[in-house]
Amino acid sequence: MDLPPVISRPSPNFGTRKDAATPSLIVLHYTAMPSCEAALERLCDPAYEVSAHYLIARNGDVYQLVDEVNRAWHAGAGLWGSCNDINSHSIGIEIDNDGLSPFAAPAMDTLDALLRQIMNRWAIGADCVLGHSDTAPGRKIDPGPRFDWLRLQRQGLACVRRVDPGEATG
Image (cartoon, rainbow, N blue to C red; front, side):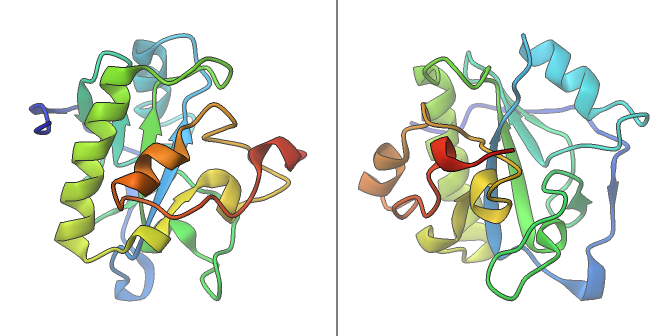
């Protein structure tokens, strides 16, 4: 599947990547909100100081909220190897899902296409496609136990999940 047209919905919640960092990670999240529209409002509201580079709706629509060259505010406190500023080193993708339901097929199809483009653009390997739970175990559980990591692995878009979101406590 080709990536559907990307809808621009700029968020004011971003900054400059620190120390001239470039993306070397992709971090996947679920929105845990009742709708894509509610997630868009939250991710674009300066009062919440949260964003992501992309939001994928259940119907497969994809919104770009922050330009990839900028630092979106999606990962918070976290660590991956020696990297302790996940936001400066990553592209954040939010997927419209409540955290309990299966991920919609159109959203997963769009995710596949978007991952391929980002991975090619920034030379990011499958081992650097992570869940928020990987970078903040015990604090975050997304994209959650219903997320189909094996689907991504079969396509070379991710490796086996490193942290079981069901074991995370926060």
